[in-house]
Image 1 (tube, rainbow, N blue to C red):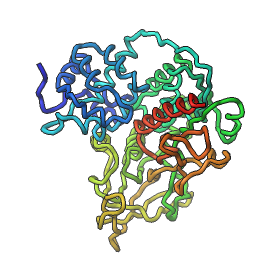
Image 2: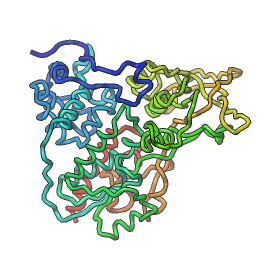
Image 3: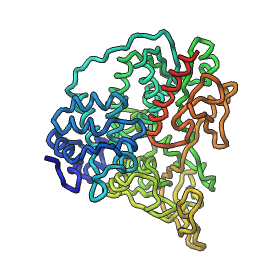
Image 4: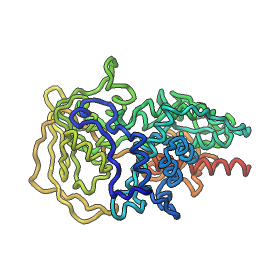
Length: 461
């Protein structure tokens, strides 16, 4: 019998007051009984609208049917035919704007908890599954992937399954990209990311770390070494700043830097001598998921007051509703319709306050959101000792400026055609390097599409 409840089976979480001071995972996941109960809410629609909302085309009704039967191993097997990183996607994908937004159950209630079920299947496999990964027969061709983030890892996995000898060149000392340095431990545990990476290694993917392409060697040199095609999935890690007075003060940094020091340099663990700002009062400027991650991390690093300063209203915030909800539960204070116009420093050159101006919403801009308009004479001082800028990122120009024939648009994003090929033959690109900062699952979808196009290109030759 289908479960006709209009609400999802609640998922266990840490108490907000407890979790706000630790880096353990906030959401604890379903039990098998909970997963089966939630899976029974799926109507198994014949036209499968949920699949159309998934950038990597997960066979959603099929895997949920297995889950309803109490077969998470079968569900995992179905998921991984199209998705190389299910434990990651189950945690950080914005399902509410993608697969779940298409769910028929969402018309008169809450959609099926597709992400929660995907996470359960992946986690069960990691703790109980002993299925050996079989390496495909080599096809005699080799390809290179620049960047070990979600786009690069997905591309590498799909090509490896086709028999290619794949080498991933990762700039940092560990693979995973934004999954490792950007998303905090309490949202995405790093050992889970590394288990997903190990699955790719088991497929035969070679991962070389500390390889900054554009410095150690260029894309042109990779092709000279016999790589028949190259995928560039180098992300968008170059932070933007506001250009206001005082941004050069001590205590002002980008969210990228702040999160990297905490996540990748293990600033959250005792015993690591990681240089991270010790703050009492923190302002995070921005309203996206990265801003929520930075604010919630600041609480866990010991800050007494953490403010989100966002120039639009909460309705216009691009962050996931779940992340906003969790941040509020944990004690982050939201200053919507506010915008910093100047930062003030103390006698030691450290930021001591942000001069903030109140805003009102005017007419919609080109993005469709109403433009914020400053209210004259509304400025006030907000005492803070740390300001974290989270107002967007753009691709690093290193690769495009060291590769002949590689063109970018005015935002610094690589230009690709309908087959994901750049302006240089044999070089493909996808993810944030092409779109600018976006979601993990969209980057994975781009990596998947590029792998298919690269295979067709090499076969045609």
